[in-house]
Amino acid sequence: MATINDLVSRIKYRLSRQQDSSIDARIVAELAAAQESFEGGTTLPWFLNVQLPYEVSNAHDNFSVLNFPDFLRIAEDDYALRVEDLTQTDETLLKLSRQDTYEKLIGYLPGTADATTLPVAYCILGNTIHIRKKQVVTRNYYLSYFRKDQTIPAANVSTLWSTYVPDLLAAEAGIQVAQYLRDTAAIKFFMGLRSVKFAELVRRNQAVQDADQNYVMGE
Image: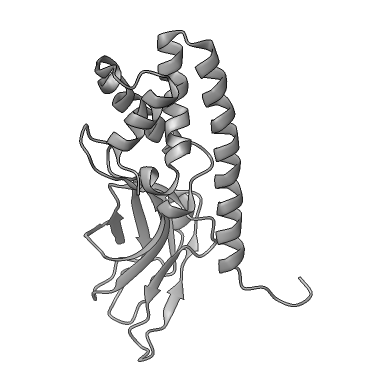
C-alpha cells in the first residue's frame, strides 16, 4: 500500500533526484492534479465504483432528492438506482428507470404520493438525484456510482489511487514534473509507464465488469 510520500520518493528516484527536497511540494501538487484529471476523464477505475445505501435527505416539488457531494458519475447500468420495497419481507429491491431530463421525469405519476406509492424513475442533476415521486415513508436507496477519492494531502497517507494504481498516478505526475525540469529522458520514461499502466487499468476494469456480469446462454 503506497502512501503519497512513497510516490514522491518513487518519482524522485526515477528522476535521479533522491536528495532534492525542493521539488517535493511540486510533486505532491502534480499527484493531486493527476488524480483530479483521471477522475474527470471518461475511464473511471473499478475501485471508485460503489453501491451504498442512502436515505432521502430532502424533498420538494413532489420529488425525493438524494445529495451526493462525492458524486462523479452513475455506473453504466440501466438500473443503477434501486430502492427498498416495503411491501415485501424478503428485502426486495425495486429497479428505477433513469430519465435523461427533468422534463421527462415530471411526466411520471402525476399527483401526490401516499404511503403505498412506489418510486419509479429518477434523473441526475449535477450531484443530486431527483426521484419520482416524493415518498411519505422512509426508504433506503441503493445507488451504484463512481465517487471521488479523498483529496491528496501533503502528508504520509494512502488514497485509493495510491493504493491500487500507484505507478499510474506517479507516471501522470512524473510527466509534468519532468517537463518542469526539462528532463527529456524522464518525460519519455514516464509517458511510456503511463501508457502501460493505463492499459492495465482498462483491462482490470473489464475483468471486474465480466466477473459481475450475469451471462445468459445464447447471448
